Amino acid sequence: RRVHGKKKKKIVTIFFVLMLMLNCKLKGTQFPHFHLKVLWLPGSIAGLFWCIGNFFITAAVAHGGNSIVTAQVVSTQLVTSGLWGLIYYREIRKWNAVVWSCCSIFTLALMVLLSNEKV
Image 1 (cartoon, rainbow, N blue to C red):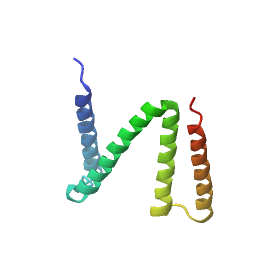
Image 2: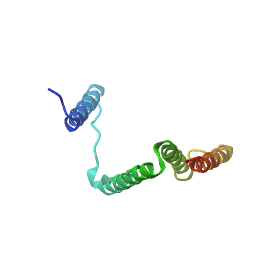
Image 3: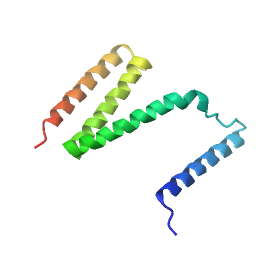
């Protein structure tokens, strides 16, 4: 008998939660709290933005083609994540920030050039 997609996801999720509980029990630590009252709004907003972004990525791939749009999406995600690390979390400073900025500009320029390659 085959297990369908949704059942597989549930089984895998339950398995990993049980492994986490076993790990906490063996280490003598407390199982992490989910903090649903605190995280429901930011988590819901993040999930909503992810769904909207995923919809637009699918629409862009249908319009622009997989080979070009996928590279653009990955480049944009990379630069956006790096900007969060640079500006919000202040992970890199001084000359490292300058080098990262030059590399991200180079990446964005190549992304624009790639978009002109569609035949």
